[in-house]
Image (cartoon, rainbow, N blue to C red; front, side, top):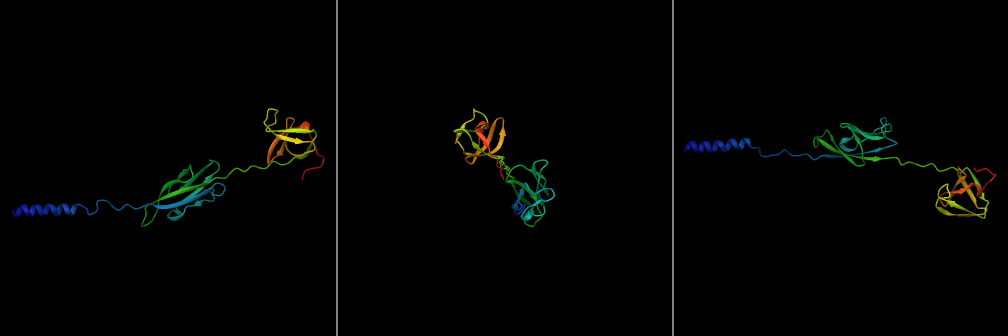
Length: 183
């Protein structure tokens, strides 16, 4: 009977030593980092730096030749969308990884305002302003005789003029060019 009790106690002791108190190691939460890459500013000679624990570990830039945004450092990726997230290894007592969110600032194309070539006056009693340089263009309005117009383009017998904060087209036959120069 003693042998059975001793065997039973040894088994319990043996299982108690082998079974850990915690079945899982503590899972560390990922640190959070951010980076903003600006298209006209951050190049491979002027990197954007990440924030937080990712600082000086991860850099970003825009490559004009590839027309693409990239991050480089502890991890190297092409960034394809604004707010894209990446997992980056970091050196910390509290974290082994960080979630890096990359924001992109793309340049908005700027349009060069059309330069006024010269001014002119309407010679007919009225002339129609059209949406294109064709009689098939949509009618935008009319101009009365002696109305002054600013011509920004001349094409195939038509003048493109400034009209109501936009542009329209009139026949060159209906406009007389002013002799005074535009400054």
